[in-house]
Length: 374
Image: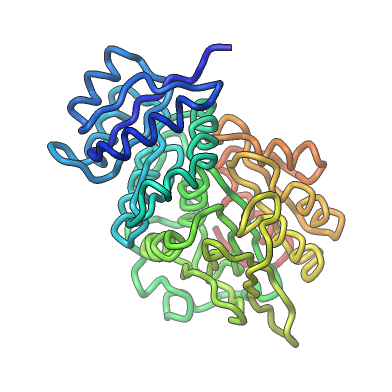
């Protein structure tokens, strides 16, 4: 079996050396080159034709984001970002994922050598996933993807306050869906897939609860980014807060999220339990609580991602009366989690990503749970 050929791009000689060593220890991959900046990397990519590159976000001579943008426009290929675990690093990483990077590794600010060694398994696993990912040019946030379903309402790159829940423009012309909740699970490629789905939802959509595999320190910036793009409000979930229509709640990195009933209300519950299916937060935890607490009032969505996290619990949702939709292979970056959900018999429908939000709206309208409009 041919080895996965990797080019490492990082301005730190120490990081280049460590990543090269970590990669070359794997039987199924090899580091064929290490560049100190994007200009040197450009020549290596041209001559070495790697399968995957790891890319530092902030480097001299050319910013890593500028380089990634040009790369994905001229020669799309799998990229794993290596980003510093800071607020600035999180924002840059989210921009890289928007531009088409497959995934990222959060390197520590201090103790880089020991930190990267501890992350060796994560780094090599993400390189393996990237080597098998479907790479495509990602439309910038707020821009309509070619061939996508027309939006339910006109979208913009910033959601005006007038379109927010509770404002005059969002005043209900029919009964708001206070009993329904949409549950979303996603992993590799899911940050942009979730964004594409959420921007299509109207301001009076049911509550949305999202488990996206992300480490601590990134979900707050991710939620803030989505909040500026969507008509619904988007925030990192807080333990014990009431789950409201017109709002989306993202599980904080490193914490499981579930839903509970408290009297007539639903609340978000955050816990620090052991990883489930190797993940914390885990889709399995969220979806299992949906099956137990909401039953037929839940709508499940499984988006792109590697592995099988959430597949069995999504089947439990279906058995409890929930309606489930799964992203199709052609529109996934990685088809692992959707494939496992389908194999488990969890899916009612399998759809291209651009059609999922519209189908959710149709489903809710037919159930009388959302405003009678598109």
